[in-house]
Structure formats: structure tokens, C-alpha cells
Image 1 (spheres, rainbow, N blue to C red):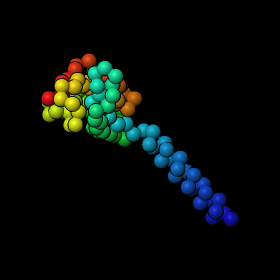
Image 2 (cartoon, helix red, strand yellow):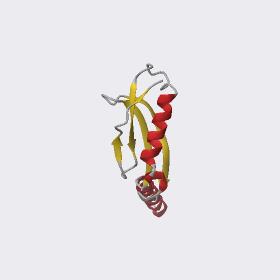
Image 3 (cartoon, helix red, strand yellow):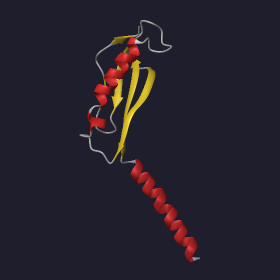
Image 4 (tube, rainbow, N blue to C red):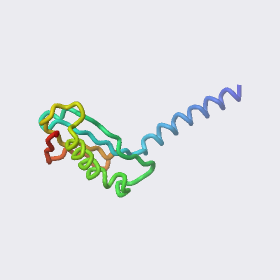
Length: 108
């Protein structure tokens, strides 16, 4: 009986720890969205880090990296999106910042 209780406690602790650690992982996510209704054309997970602060380069440079990704995406035609479509970037730096860009890029 002791072993069953001990096993339940260990499993509960493991699940709790995984949830706790998962909450401390930051990710930099980027989307190319339409300039009017923000319909997503494409998305990328640019970087992630564990236990990092907002000053960590993976988070501090998230907006610039996203801007560059969407600019390149537009210059190469935006995949299967109709040529001439307009796109902007939308980034989320895991609690360190998020926004929709004001620069509009035209899909080649």
C-alpha cells in the first residue's frame, strides 16, 4: 500500500512539474497575415527558450526576426497566396511583447 501511495505522489509531482516547467518556456511565434482582416497566410515558430527573461536575444529580437521573415515571404510570392495580396507581420514573444506590424508588404 505504501508503494502505491508513493507512486501516486511521484506521478502527481511529475505531472505538476511538467506543467510548471511548460509555463516557463517562452516562444517567439510569427505570422504573415492579411493587412485588413489579419487572416493568417503562414506561421513560423522562430525560437524558444527555457527560463529566459525578456532581455534574452531569442525574445528581444522576436519582432525584428518576424518582420524579416514576412518581408522575405512576401518577396518570394507568399506561397499559394494570390499574387498582389497585401500582408503584415504579427508576432508574439511569449509574454515579452506582441503586436501587428504597420509595414504592408505586397506578395510578389
